[in-house]
Image 1: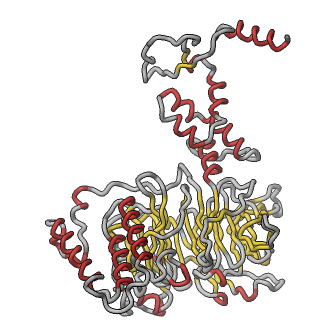
Image 2: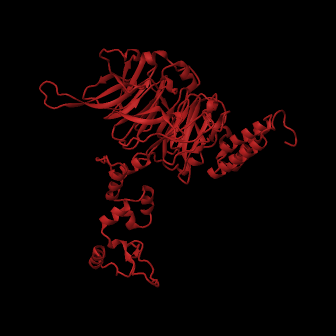
Amino acid sequence: MMRRSQKRKLQKVTGLCRPEEGLRVKRSCPSCGPEPEGEEKKGRGNPISIQLFPPELVEHIISFLPVRDVVSLGQTCHYLHEVCDSEGVWRRICHRLSPRLREQGSGVQPWKRAAILNYTKGLYFQAFGGRRRCLGKSVAPVLAHGYRRFLPTKDHVFILDYTGTVFFLKNALVSSTLGQIQWKRACCYVVLCHGAKDFASDPRGDTIYRKYLYVLATREQPGVVDTAHSRSCDCVEVYLQSSGQRVFKITFHHFMSFKQIVLVGLEAQRTLLLLTEEGKIYSLVVNEAQLGQPRSYTGQLALRKVSHCLPHLRVACMASNQGSTLYITDQGGVYFEVHTPGVYRDLFGTLEAFDPTYQQMPLPVSLPAKVLFCALGYNHLGLVDEFGRIFMQGNNRYGQLGTGDKMDRGEPTQVHYLQRPVALWCGLNHSLVLSQRSDFSKELLGCGCGARGRLPGWPRGSASFVKLHIKVPLYASSLCPTRECLYMLSGHDIEHHPTYRDLPASRVAGTPEPSLGAEAAQDPEGVAAQACELYLRQIHSCPTLQERMEKTKEVVGWMPLMAAQEDFFWEALDMLQRAFGGVGQGPPTPDS
């Protein structure tokens, strides 16, 4: 009786419908116009507009939808777009995804950004060896506010979130559902430190050398004499990657503020490069053999030659390996520091201009457009400009430049069949590109040496970028392979993502293939015919049917086909290769 009376009272107050009638909501908005009138069905009440509901109630209902449904609902009409894009909806969604998050941060839409960061965050990995090649997911720290960066080390993985917290994801022995003890990657986590800005480790591609983790952080220092308040100072804290124990700390003057750290050199002569907020580079030399000793000493922080000789340059970001450093300015310019003659010869093809007494002298790299980001390997590199074009340079012994051949390049060379990558990675002798299809799904392409499963599906490697047999997460944003597996970081930041410009029409037709001459821009059909003839000659020169199949796969990867067409041809060739697996030993016959 009590429930009936409450129901009748509610109906009387609202007046939305009679007890015997149902409630029908009419979706309409001023921009879309009213819904066309028609005959009402029996047993149905008159439709009402969703705008009659209080905005707080609509926001509260929408906040229970999944994030993808909220975005889709906001694309239906103008009114729902305003409701779904309001900060009230995203604040409720953010509290549901991350109940412990209280500060939304800064930006135009801070709550929307925070909700999407926590919805899309994830760390995935796929092992190179073994029979089961499935995609695994690491443990997700509850306290993490999105994933900003990650770094796999010798035994574990470190993650930096958007609030400056570094998480220590540990590998451990766990019990499976069948009661068996198995080794699992990144299955538990602890908080390593707070207030971090960036971190770095040994720049070599092999994680076995990453013994220490260098964390650039901000710490409150106690007040000095005649000063009542404490000061915030930047510092570099050094942790053991095996246990997470802090073994060393370097504190800087409170006037100096840094935003990025990279390492150069080997353990006995480790150089820390620090990028300030003003775009200047400072360096500090550390001997890692003395980090574990309980002693303190004073180091000298020196201005790097790139900032000393070119004071007008403002460096935006930098990348490094054990023998070279690359700087990208805020205007998109690129400068090199090469420290060893071998790396210099691989990158530029000659030793004529190399001077061992001026190893820190920056070398400019000429490109036709502004560079957005880069990837630096041991003896080759990749650059991505504002139009989404990929340029490769350096040693090409294994085909790691993706140019379709194995000829070294002493200057940036464009890879014409790849555009607008999400991420680019260069290793010892292979390269990876994370790209996005037209349906917003991701795929991973690779080239170079395929030994030890580095290029899944291509054990012999490839001299051009080919699609790898890896399932890529929908929101994958960066990657880092190790000797054992490939790690992929998932996350989407609505305020910081590469936005490419459209290439002007005058420059589209003026970028022919370098090997085809200047006639390519005038006769594209003839150039395509010449390329097909060249591909057929390469396939015909293969001595066995197996090699012809592999070469045909590479040719499919070179051709400017749509993603669905590439998948079709690759799957068809795989089926034929498996069907004729026993054929191909010896010279080809006319029937084959």
